Structure formats: structure tokens, C-alpha cells
Length: 72
Image 1 (cartoon, rainbow, N blue to C red):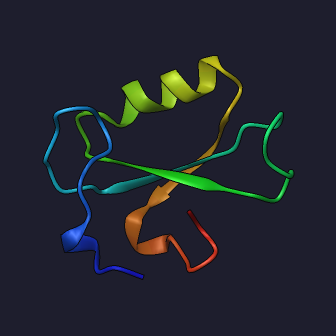
Image 2 (cartoon, helix red, strand yellow):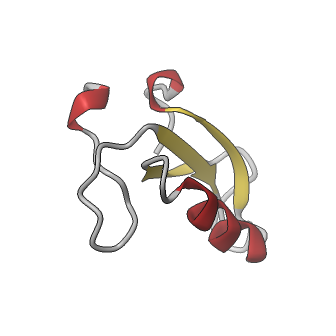
């Protein structure tokens, strides 16, 4: 896994360091156990969670240090 200090927020135009990993999947495309990850800084965490949640994709949010090799 990449070191947390090298990870940047997935929000468009944001270059801030990511603090959070938003794990999600699209049930129409991915198996139930598959997780993709968007990274979020503290400022964009809520917005990205709402975006994924409105589509039924958001599964959980964890600190980037808790992301493992099977995430993403």
C-alpha cells in the first residue's frame, strides 16, 4: 500500500492530502464483496459520501491508514 502522506483527495480539483478512504461498489457492476476506494480530505469527505450514498454505492468510510491491500 502507498504511504498515507502520498495519497491525495479524489474530489475534482483538490490536491489536499487524503485522510479518509470511502469504500464503495456499484452492485450492478461489482460482486458484493468487491470494494473500490475514493480518497477524501476532511473538507470533501461528507460531499463524496453523499454523492456515493445517493446512488446506493457507499459502503463505509475508514481512515486511510486502515485501508488494506484488498481495498481499491
